[in-house]
Each structure stands twice: as C-alpha cells, then as structure tokens.
Image (cartoon, rainbow, N blue to C red; front, side, top):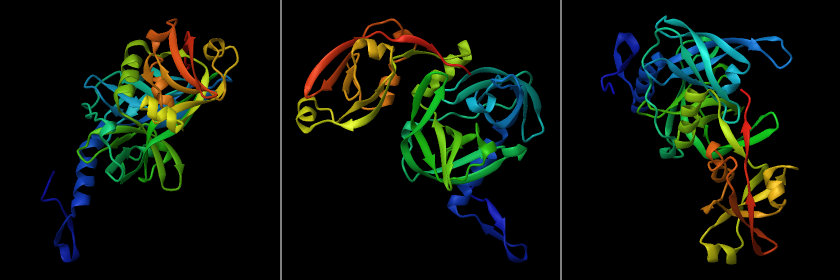
Length: 326
C-alpha cells in the first residue's frame, strides 16, 4: 500500500491519510478497473422487453465476469463499460437464480482479472470495501465492516425454494446498481458479490467460498446448475441435551415443511423431524444438506437419520433432478 498517500490540507499543505483511508483508497484504486457497469436487455415471463443494469467483476483474464442472477434475469446479451473507457458487448453464459450468481463474458478485450479471496476467512468487525458502478457512476466506493456472518437469504426459482447460507452482512452502503459489484477485503481480494440492500445501513453479499466457486465453475462449463432436489424446508435447532451428549452434535435441521410428492415426502420424512445426518455427514443447517445435493446425487439413494419423538429413524431418499431457470 502507498504509505505516502496524502490529502491536500489548508493552504495547499499535504495531510497524510490515516491508516483506514489508505486501505480504502488503495483497494478502490486497485479494484475499480476490474468492475464493469452492465446494461442488459431481454424479455420477462410475459414476453415483454426488459432492460436491466448493475455491476460485474472480471474474474478471469479472458473476460469472464461475475454478477447477480437477478441483474441478468431473462437476458442473453448486453454491454459492459469500464472506468478506463473500454466498452464491450457481453453474452450471458449462465445464471443460477437459487444462488443469485451469474457469469457473463466479454466478446472483445476486457481488463485483467481481479483476485478472488475466501469469505470463510472473514471475521465480524473486519474492514470491507464495496466497489460497483451504480447507474453507470464508475468506481462508486463505500466502506464499512462485516457486521454479521452466516446470514440467510431466501431465494426462489419456479417451484424450488432455497436459502443461500453464509451470506455476508455489511454496514457499507449499497445502492441498487451495486448489485453484482465486488465486496473486497483490505488486501483487495474479492470475498463477495454484492446482492441486496436489506434495510438502512444493511447490505448483503453472496460469499466467494468453496461452494460458490463450484457453482461458478459449473455455470462457466454448462451454463446452468443442475441440483438434486429433496423437497424439504428446515431450520437449525439445538438437539436435546441427552442426544447432543450421545452424538457429539449440538444442532440438527428441524423439518418445517415437506413438499407433497417430493423425494423427502416419499422417503417418509415428516414435518417436525430433526435431521441429524445425511449420507453419513452431520447436518446442522440447510447449507449442510444443500452441499450434498449437486448433480452427482441425482438418483442415488441418500440415507437420512432423523430424531422423531425421541427415537432415531433412518429413511432412504432418492433425490431428483432440478434444473433452475435463469
């Protein structure tokens, strides 16, 4: 970082920037060239023309960019503009409404890639910087701290509902056009993709972690994410003490709803069951279950152990394929 960064004070004198300002200005300067302003066109479900806008982050040197699925919904193409004046047409490579992530690609030259980080290493209170292009205002920068980790963001695509787990909550101000922009740590590594304004002073970002990297890679390769579908909705719930002592597990996933006719329904799972394990792995949250439900689980028997009325129950569920619309 530039230790000699300074601001102009009274009578033209230079006032050294404080440490916080040096971090923010350095991250902004380094990251802004890799963040695009997106304009996309398409049709809505009623066949009407729609136009959308947002931000996107270049994450490969051959022009692939990350943005939100809701930014490009119903669109197949558009344009991207960068702070250095570069403009390029873009194609929507793939979108996944259930993670609110999408990949687009520049048809011509684009800036080099930003560096992706790992949101799993974030801590509450850590400084983060949001960089986007709301309404085409290049290099719009806000800064704040991570105010919460492990937040949940409900999403829906067609008949499928899902909860995006481990969402990052920040107090950095986010404008609507920041959707798809970068959330970076103090080293300028992109640890999240800004997705929503949840209220005054509350912003949310999809984390960049092992699960989302897998989604991104699948979108690049196949243009869509095929998931295995069970058909249950649940919430983390503490286990009874005697069960926790016996299993060494503090929480399970309480089944709040079983979708009629779904694999979960056919397996015999019931509302009120407390799921402990699936495929031999502990389940303490919706994310624990969701990360088992990618394409390779389709049609493969999945043993689920649940606590029901104080007794352990084993059932076999056979997940079905679920292709989420963009």
